[in-house]
Image (cartoon, rainbow, N blue to C red):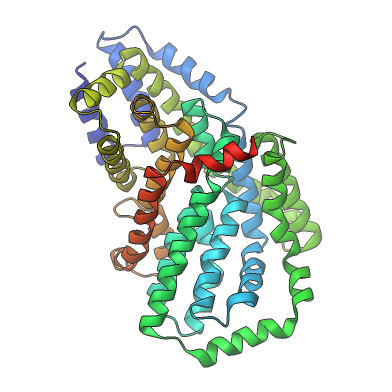
Length: 432
């Protein structure tokens, strides 16, 4: 099968909303069925099972369950109050506290939609009560929730590490500075917006004084266990005590301990529902990853990645041009396909090109994740938009328009991350 026809058919199946796992499975079988490749249905099934036999990928369901436990346990409220205590009286203090909460919660859940849901459900009504426009309040959470796939531990990093044969620990460390950079840029826009449109100082100070009246020590006592969560998870990884997969087990156990016995926000009888919800979510991702593994194997046997790499490099070997082109490809793909399938499709195609122009695979993993995080906030398939729109009943296109200034800040950071490798690679080098 001609390479052009192969990818046109792939695109058509995705555009008509054929199930993503089914697309990968069908496209894996097709070359063998028409005689282009000795890779039949039995080989596809074997590839799917062998792809799941991965210690690294075992971290994905564990972090997903951990994130659900934290969401049910109401940790986002305690984090928001803690940050609001320090900056709530400043211009854009509470909107910035929302961004900080998203950043911190991202280090707990590892998931962008989970961050939007857990943080947004509590902070959006609060900001509206303080006099902020509901569309602005929702757009903050929608975009800042994208940090859930950038700030470690991230499910996207785990999937990319498995697909690119990269170190998940290095990716976790590399994602810290880019995540902080993007979070800082979003806070800058919050400050600009509030300076332009003003704030209801009377309501804000009333809420801020309410937090101050609690006192620092009682507030720290309430939020201590929530604040300690990412310290324990990431500390175990960065100190070399355990691998990301083992840290995922620790995150589940710690989350259960905190939510059931410390905060008592989850009852033992409700744990079954939490685990079942986690299993239902993971089953879909599991099949996509398994089918995508077979898809990547078929493409490798057909030498499509090498063909595409040679074709791109024959046109230009300018590193800047190639990086810009790959960023555009990833941004467009992020708009129409979900995060995990994108990683499984694009990694075997783009990583060889990136390596050919001297881009470190860990650095490229951060670039890819940042691009796909933007895709989670852009129509038509932006999952963060669907989650936030569903919570607030704001029309999705209206919400998408409101996120544009935040996305401009996000894109500026993406360019810095793309062309300044040390933003991603300096910390892993220091901690090795």
